[in-house]
Amino acid sequence: MKRWESKRLAELGSAIFSEVAAWKREVTARGVDVIDLGIGSPDRAPSARVMEALTRAVNDPGMYGYPTSEGSAQFRQAVARWYAHRFGVALDPEDEIVTLMGSQDGLAHLAMAVTDPGDTVMVPDPGYPIYSASLVLAGVQPYHMPLRADNGFLPKLEDIPAEVARQAKFMLLNYPSNPLSAVADLAFFERLVEYAREHGLLLVHDLAYSEMSFDGFKPPSILEVEGAKDIAVEFHSLSKSFNMAGCRIAFMVGQRDAVRALRVLKSNIDYGVFLAVQQAGIAALEEDMMPGSRSVAALYERRRDIVIEGLSEAGWSIPKPKATMFIWAPIPAGWTSRQISREMLYSAGVVVIPGDAFGKEGEGYVRIALVQEEDRLREAVRRIGQFLREASR
Image (tube, rainbow, N blue to C red; front, side, top):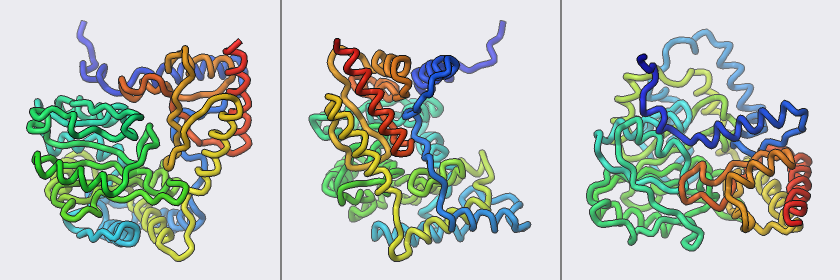
């Protein structure tokens, strides 16, 4: 009998996410009050200004025609102003910006736009699942760069085989990182740009968490490096920074040939982001540029401290991350990532994601998402502490 399912579907993403969802359904069905620290979906709404802009736009009859797949000129101009304000980077809205239906849209399609089947692409391990899944869709071979604690979860460029560097079309990295919560400074990006020039690589940087940093650290853009726009593109999303995850709006900026290639591909796939949502995106970017504007960083820094300090008191010592809405937690000895995640849910009613969901190098860790209010996080910490005490008996 014919199968109405392509073989590539089996290679997409990680089955662990589906497995965790099944665990949660089973535990919830028992009547357990589950605290979900699994998926990184913001639990707050956008600002009143953003919601008002969306409301006005939704009530404008002129918003309901087909948008263009590259995004409205008005939105792209707002992105250019924001990049200049936030990073000091000048962008041409006509040729160096493309609007996306969330950064996952662009990350899923970029390899199709700039590579050919059989090409090689360097991706991080651990890494956000769409990085590798996009290569499956494009028929591209991945080279997984191991990211480990002993190097600050940065790739060791000197360890990449010369043949891989010669053949690869692009290298994809993500700082601040999901799931690692690792950060990179401008000096690292300078070395990376030099490496890419030497090997003829396109650099692809996912900067979705730039506005969620702590302890005075300000994540840089790779495009701040002189000449980086000649060899690099960067993704940014309004989902996490502005609590607009459901709106599905983001953008890719930088190297104009790659921007054009993604625009061409998307023009054959979709008609772009609803114009009303683009108006809300403009309002978010403009509000962020206002004097005295507040970012979401302070909220997540408080949440980070509640979880890290509470778990430390419970005997689980975890390094404090400098950014993102996640904690990348090395697990206590004697467990695998999947074992402790499952037992934590079944015994304590707390959902976390096993580290191996993000690649082979993720074994030995779990990812904790800071997506609950502070009282719920304290309750989660209390339950995890009790679970750890009982497990150690």
